[in-house]
Amino acid sequence: MNKLIIIIVGFLLPALGFAAGGGASFPNDDITIDWDDKVSMQRGARTFVNYCMGCHEASYSRYNRVGADLEIDDVQVIENLIFTTDKYGSKTKVGALMTNTMSLDYAAEAFGVSPPDLSLIARSRGVDWLYNYLRGFYVDESRPFGMNNGVFDKVGMPHALADLQGYQVPKMAMRADSNGEMQNIIVGFDIVKPGTLSKTEYDQTIHDLVGFLDYVSEPYRQTRHNVGTGVLIFLFLFLILAYFLKKEFWKDIH
Image (cartoon, rainbow, N blue to C red; front, side, top):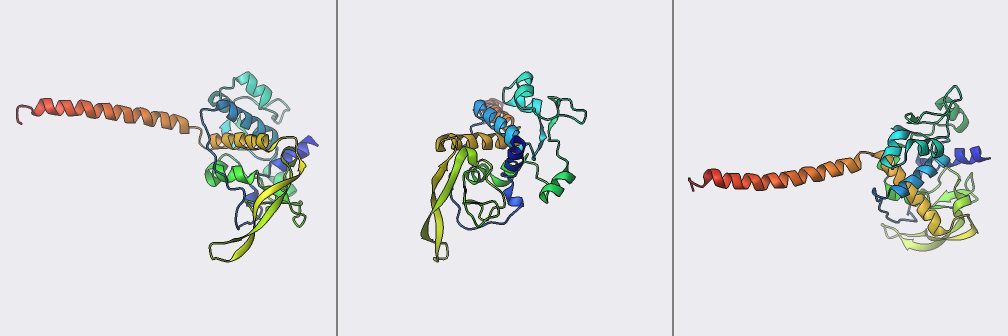
């Protein structure tokens, strides 16, 4: 049962690859990822390896690099983030890439398409999109899996996080679109079956997961920002020095 849940959840993030969508989006909230909040990213990493890596990979990242960046020692990484084995049945090494054991051929045969790597999903779709998408599933009996999505209409994926979020139905209202035509769009949700998490707790869980995916998509960002700040400070100090040197060299001429 747990393996089935992991397999289903793994398809949530890249639902775009399986269906076409459009129209007004709800929810449509903005979030800010705090790269200094390592605890949040640690929780996001835990959610990722438990729910997404059954099918998806983050093959541009290594476990020990993630651990070092998120301030998790190798022992904790092995105990809490690594659940795969190699072809000999031994636990995956801490220095290995974050891949799973599902072959592309098997995935294509089982699901009709190979699940995409999630290493760059936050860069390709943006953190706001991911955050809203993972909170936007609602009951729709007309869909094959009985679920639709307010951000991605006619989504082809089930809502495997429903046990956490609960089941919700949309609140509709007539609104004018950009062409002035009236449309019946989603303006909110009502929970009809609560999940194990409150709305605030679920939103935080998704925020943590998206924060981790944002980190994975560009792990050198914080280093680059720090180096850039140092370079700007150096150039500013050098400008002051150059100015006084110029005054000293040219004082007799002026």
